[in-house]
Amino acid sequence: MKKRISKFPFLLACIAGAFTGCQTPTQRVAAPVNYDESDYLISKNYEAADKLIDQLKNLQASDGFIVASFTNINDLEESSSFGRISAEQVASRLAQHGLKILDIKLRKDEIYVQSALSSGGNPGEFLLSRNLKDQIGPQHDISAAVVGTYTTTRYGKYTHVNVRVLQVEDGSILAAHDFSLENREIQGLLRLASRN
Image 1 (cartoon, rainbow, N blue to C red):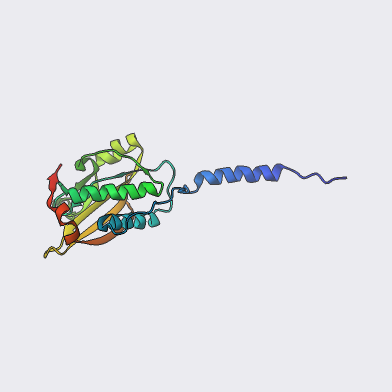
Image 2: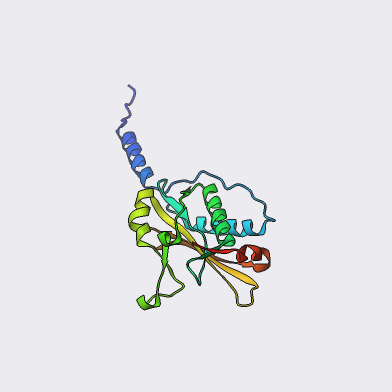
């Protein structure tokens, strides 16, 4: 007589696997494309995006990201061609990694505000706006915002850049990276400043 094998344990394993699959981080299947490493700015911004990806381990398929134009750390309202193209390049690289990047154009004051000394904050510290947390974020399913700041050294040789991923819900830092650029490579982009 053949021994009957119960299917019950197998079904339990399948059910458990299904629930586990719902709770595990999304596997990003997109592979970053190759790029021209001789292009100075693209290389630096793509490398920065790769560093952020290395720190983002618990992403879900529903997590939506926005990327804001990088701003001058000394003036929240000031951006430049450098700040805008850097944000676009970082967004491109993150999308190549399989992240859900939402192409939503928001004003800077809709994304973050500059903390004031009167409130005990650092004037160079940017905080996510309440409008983004309570209205824009939920409306567009935005889970995190990628923001960047830059400043040029006193003698104008380098521009230091900080880029970070902030969780919209509470403003906590999910990933961050700092890097420096030689001004001789980007000085034309830095000159073209603008205000929103």
